[in-house]
Image (tube, rainbow, N blue to C red; front, top):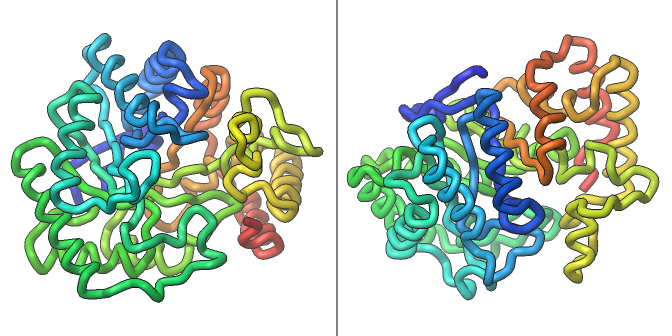
Length: 352
């Protein structure tokens, strides 16, 4: 497995990351431990979590459970020095913090809580799950309204948060800091403030990115290239759409959509499962078949052709699903399928 550094930091990680957001809900503890064992055997040492996990749905009573499962695995196996652990502090959330925005004090408290749950003395990458000023992520880009933002208050907030992160880095509790669900303006300002005040620079940004969702390709990619920030791409399979499991109206038992619907949700993958997205999925499956490639493997391999630093986060509910993902990690796409993907992107741009 190729190893890469997160941005300009000294944190070296595997070129593929294991996502753990199902641990404690769709994936039980034994299943989560088996996945981490299998991933490590395959050379995947980088694991991503968050204090609010598991999701689908997020429930107050399960907040922190995914971190606990990772912590129990680290304690049982003694693998802490063999892996890199990333986690996140939640933005305003009814289930996690009663909609309280994070600040320097919350950052310090959140780090301590995550360290306890993870049963470790350090976090390799600590991320801000989403901005406290509002976010265009989670399909909010269609109705994004920044009219309530205050630039000076935002910059003061950034200094406060970066100060807390700096103290944690100096105390040896954090190795690097990162963002998630951020915009180009936000990433740029976090970096500017850090540089001005000699505070930790953001090494990574975790945003959604897949064949079906390519907002990152525009302004964010340019910022990240010029400022040396690594993309950690979540939902590289578009929440399962690109696997084809939802084709022809199917909703397999135990799938993310079915679990959401059973919990009272819409079962539309957070707004991703649209007619246009399903049509785009069909087009990408046809392209994969034309080239004799597994569509799941194609979706992951394509990310590694991008002209910027990107680490796909692969997640699975079951060990079989993870095995299938791992079996295709050596695939490298030729020029022809990449050109065809670019053509299909123009035909099916931003389908959700």
